[in-house]
Image 1 (cartoon, rainbow, N blue to C red):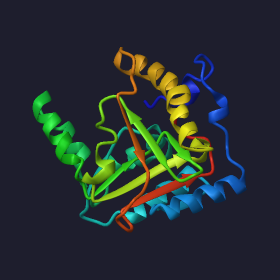
Image 2 (tube, rainbow, N blue to C red; image 1 turned 120 degrees about the vertical axis):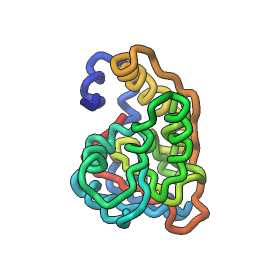
Image 3 (cartoon, rainbow, N blue to C red; image 1 turned 180 degrees about the vertical axis):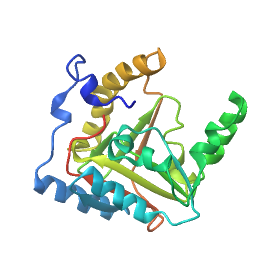
Length: 217
């Protein structure tokens, strides 16, 4: 069972000012600046629309992997990947390994999937994307390894600039994720690896699907 922000936000102190929905003008500015930096951006109204969008972009026969993402769980992609489709499911291949060393090897190989799906923790109106992880396995494919990168995010992650985006990782994502990790794994989390995505040089490689809703951490 996925654990969403709603499970912790009443008990965890975090900076709610960095988790608000942007105005239409702010969102329009953000999309324009993201596109100027080489990202393809699609804005949709619901999680259902986001699922349809990402599924339509993955051709039959492609290898697919995803990093852990509450947003992907919320839109139904994780359930979809576990169901019927004509993709090569690298996530299933990793899970089928019978020991930790082999599982880690397969997880590293899976970073180079044809299509890697995930999310980000903050989106600057100036066009940068920020994603953090404890180990790096969630974001390792982002810079280069994956053939195509499909990122899905609620617009609540849009903030003023790169400094505010990094503040959001520390003051919103970390306290909430730390509480989730305590429940899920019995240990707290840490901002071990932080990736700042300034620009995409390969045309069409990275698509960001923005949902007009408050989703994810």
